Image 1 (cartoon, rainbow, N blue to C red):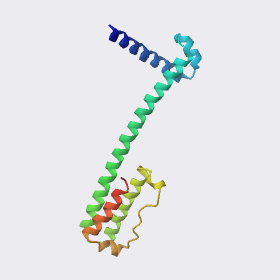
Image 2: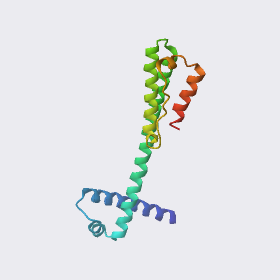
Image 3: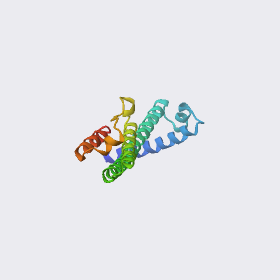
Length: 151
């Protein structure tokens, strides 16, 4: 029987918290007025609102992390596409275009993960001719540096 009582108390508490949040969010009631309406103390209302804020913040943080992960995946796909096109093209002008696209991806990674505020971006200062003459190993090393900037 004690488990039944705990369950009933939890259900009533959650129902009260829902009422508290609803009344409070209307902006028409103070905590004291809500407490008087529901027959509890203002301290209980304060605790309920704190609980509701914590739940909201947890859900919001999770949503933000999911969005960040999705954006990171999108940027990685763009980086891979630019890298593939860079490797496959023989035209130096196009190589430069794809290199710029890879550097744009690096910049987006830095912004996404807040790294743009902690230090300078990777700047390779390579000319179009230098880019055209990179070996696969050199290019992979540079791409690794770009990708690791997001880690």
